[in-house]
Amino acid sequence: MGKWFKGWSAYELVWLGVFCGIAVGLTAIMKDSLFGFTVFLTGVLCVVLAAKGNLMSYVFGMYNTFGYAYLAYTNGI
Image (cartoon, rainbow, N blue to C red; front, side, top):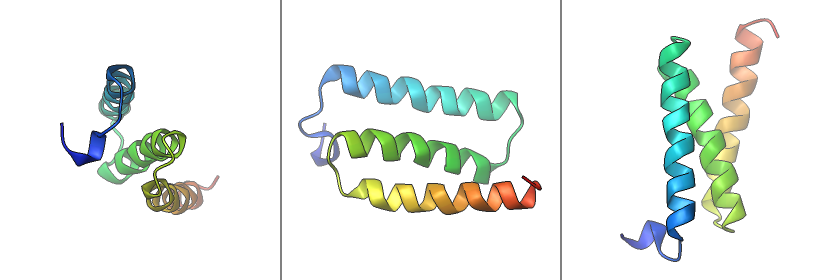
């Protein structure tokens, strides 16, 4: 399946696919922005990659943190 998913079990790939699908579904249902979707998706990816010990989790985690901070600020939260 390529170097990105080397060492991943079928269960982990299904889990990742299900939660990415949930992100797409909730974004469509709530009519969220593309930016909101990317923040949601990077949160999922950050958790999964951190559990696998992948250093890319820091990249996704930083984007997720700053993205949620921006969304919260612009929405008065």
